[in-house]
Length: 458
Ligand code: PLA
Image (cartoon, rainbow, N blue to C red; front, side):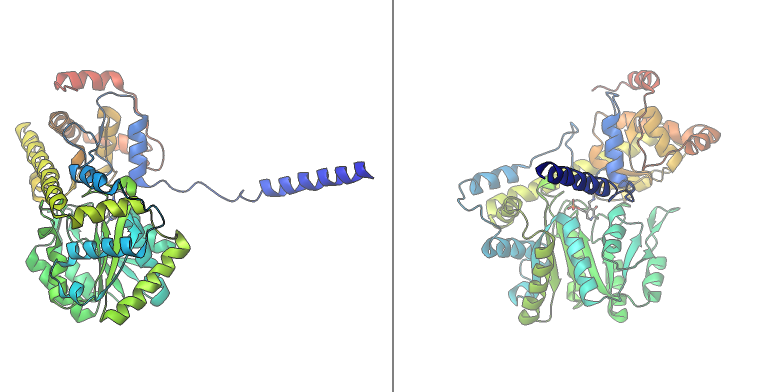
């Protein structure tokens, strides 16, 4: 009796296991994020002089990640805190208010009249996702218009909440600058739109921003078309070195009386990438509407992750609210932006010195973290394969990865791949360069001697 019950249990366990083993059989591998794929390929490369120009995270002139002094100071101030409960209303309200002041202006009426709904978010990605969920919930039939090109994850974020995306033209590959006429045309002709996403400064990936005059025209058109402008602010301070100047586009829309949505990230400008500190805010008609929208946003975040971690929010809040620490931060933002700006000038100069037949003016015309180099897929592939220099397949260079030590090597390598035999490039291009697969290159011999020839001192 006991034995048969034991056997029965054994059989039923085995059959459950068999069923369970087949539950996920239909799951296929997800395509890799192109930016993460570049980092992985870089890490897998054993070559000592390899260069990562993939992810847009700040590095110093030694190529090292930086913990900002303002963060150290803020850490010192919050270290004694006895409060490590979940992010309280007081902590999050202070953080949201400081974030709103940073983007809408210290003395903005929006802040004084409390006409904004804001909640902390898991960095810029989380803020975009919260807004996308909010958009879907309250405008289920709407669409999002994205600039072409844009950050690769934007499309995924809106796709995952089932909001269809459309694009508006943004960049002119020939002039390597803003395609303003086409942009205005596409916005004019956009049908059934709720929101269009705009990068207010340091556009990713192109490094091309509209001028103030162009922003004014875009703002008027948005007004005429009744579009909702959603700003993704991931690089405030990196375009001009001044966080106020970089908020100019948003202030123009504000002056024109728009209702605005804003995703802010402190990953780059405070070097808090790992802490995932961000903020989503939506401007409202009045205080009552603001409370309603805030409650809805909180409900959305509650079902996704509850409340965000407290430490990063406390750090950012301290940096923004303590005048001494804020002054240190503003200087550090300037230092980071200036270093990148300098690298642009040196890279362009080096390419021109090499006698490159191509025009490299756009390197210094573009602003912010990225240079949209104009290198094609085959050239990007060759740079990785022959020179161990890694960037996204669209030719985007994260300028933060360029240093005084590697800039000559980079310029020489770019010169070589842009002037080499076209047939060789085409051959390489068809050589299965897929960013979704691993790229592991080991042509060490050739590259080592090239690196030596170029006097690369690492
Ligand atoms: N918006 C834009 C325009 C971005 O470039 C990025 C990050 C984000 C939002 C998300 O920022 P978060 O880290 O605060 O969530 N883009 C990076 C990296 C830096 C990435 O994909 O995570 C990039 O290299 O494009």
